Length: 112
Length: 113
Image (cartoon, rainbow over all chains, first blue to last red; front, side, top):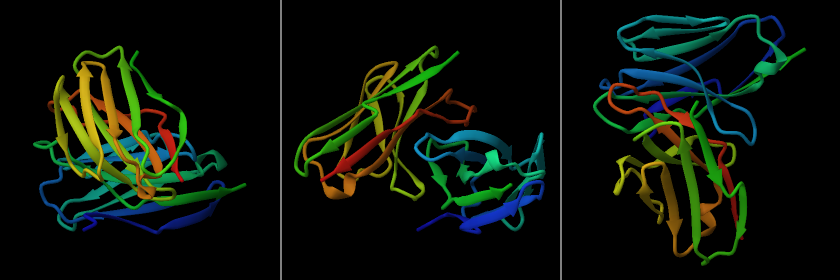
C-alpha cells in the first residue's frame, strides 16, 4: 500500500516558470515531510522540509505549502532553472517512529 | 563535517552468490543509520534502521539482512542473491531523537545477472 502519492509523474516547464509538484498522504500520524532532490546516479539530497505545525516553509526559490486537513502538500519551485532538472521525492515520517515513507517521485525537466 | 561513504560503488554479481555492502559515517557520534533500496526509476524503500551498535530493526527484509558492528558502520548482506535484488542501495544517517532529517550517501549500484 502506497501511503504517499505524488503527482504529476513527470513535469516539463520552461526556464523562469514556476513548477508545482504535489504530494498527498494517508497516515494522520505523519508530522514531518522532507522533500529530496535526486540526480541520476546520485543519492537523494534534502531540499526543504516542513513540520505539520506549519502551513508554509520557504527557502529561496523553493516553497512548501501544507494543508493538514486535506493531507496534501505541494512544492513550488519559482524561476525554474535547467539545473533544477531532477527527480523530486516527497517523504513522510512520524516523530515516534524511525520509519520513513517515500512518495513515487516527480521527474522535473526544465527547458532553457 | 559529517561524511558518509558507501562501498563498493558498483557491483555485478551472479544469482545465488553472496553480497556484502558497507556504509561508514564519519564526524558524527552514535547516529541513527538506515538502508534503502531503489529500483531503477522507482521510489525509495526503507529496508532497515539501527539506533545503536548491535541493534537493527527490519522494515522490509527482501531476503536481506543488516548488521551494525561498530558505531559508525552499517552492513547489508545476503547469502544468496536474487535477480530482484538489482537496484540502487542507499545508506542514510540521522541524529535521531526529535531530529528527523535523514542524509543520504552516494549509493551502491547492484546488478544481479
